[in-house]
Image 1 (cartoon, rainbow, N blue to C red):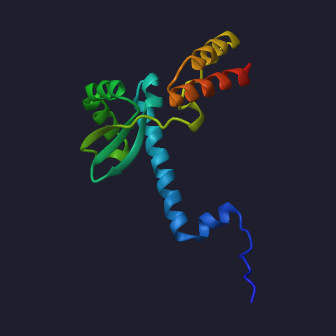
Image 2 (tube, rainbow, N blue to C red):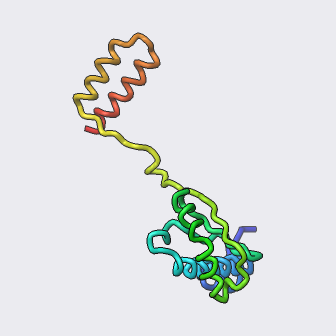
Image 3 (cartoon, helix red, strand yellow):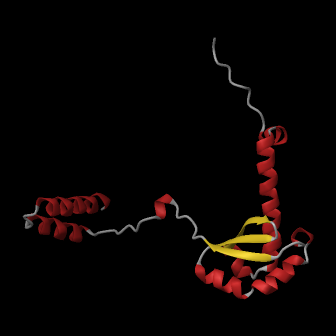
Length: 151
């Protein structure tokens, strides 16, 4: 008996038919609408640093990229609360919570790359030749070889 996979279906069909996906999609749409309402009340500079995480039981949780922006938004909290309560979506808003969560760094941008000149590579290699500690010598030779490979 051979396994026969289901035929491929369009994403729009899946979102209409699969109940778990449908609920997730509705929730994402709702958060998107709330995000646009919050952004409409924020200063333009603060918009990219503040994102809606959740809205339940009268509490709005906003994720802020760093402590600086969290502090600035906390100073404006009462004004923002009043302005958001004017919208039907936030009629029961009691409080706004801020959580600092730095953005995740892409894999490639995690470390700094330093370009070494051929003169620097030769200097490192010459230093390695005078070292008696085998681990340190090997590390310096590896460093020198990487620098030579780039040039």
